[in-house]
Amino acid sequence: MKDINNHISRTLKSLRQTRHWSLDKAAEKTGVSKAMLGQIERGESSPTIATLWKIASGFQTSFSSFIEEIHPHINEPIHRSGTAHQFHPNDNKIRVMPLFPFDKQLNFELFVIELLPGCEHLSLPHEVGTIEHVIVIQGKIEIFANKLWHALSKGEGFRFKANQPHGYRNLTKRTACIHDIIHYPKKRLTSRIK
Ligand code: MN
Image (cartoon, rainbow, N blue to C red; front, side, top):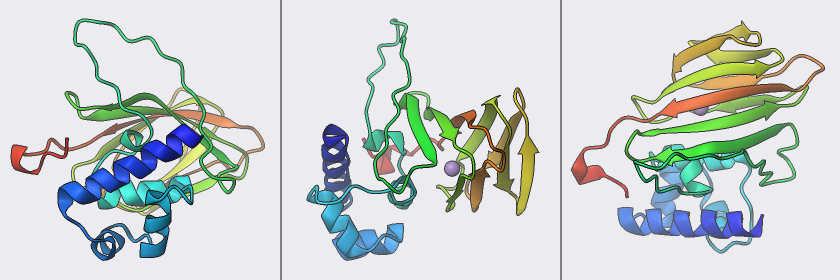
């Protein structure tokens, strides 16, 4: 928990330095208040999942890079299990586990996400060109995309452009589990972040 908060605060600081963004500019780009960004950078406050998504989208970077980075060696297989992180007490209905954090070569990240009964998570648009593939592993969920809620059952998949308002909810009484694979657009060298 503390390690994650340190990593979040370091990542935010370094992104802001790389972009030469003031706190004002970062607040304008992310929709997160200057005061909150300052608190996160100083490690005084842990962001909710929704806030962290706003920050990642505002900086046009991946969500998982705020939590963990992996440096895949192309010849070695990677065997991992998902670790549930709860960043903030308000996130009591959703658990996000980066099973494969952002991969710079392939431009994707893969999350295992648990949506508890009554969970509704809405997300602002990600960077243009971002595509999500959601696969239901357990239970039933609904995904909001193209201005409609779409019902999905176990084993079903859903692909959508994520540069639009979108969301995930569980209206049932059982915990649901999904895999969410997020592909980001390739960056031109001049604008490459890391
Ligand atoms: Mn999303």
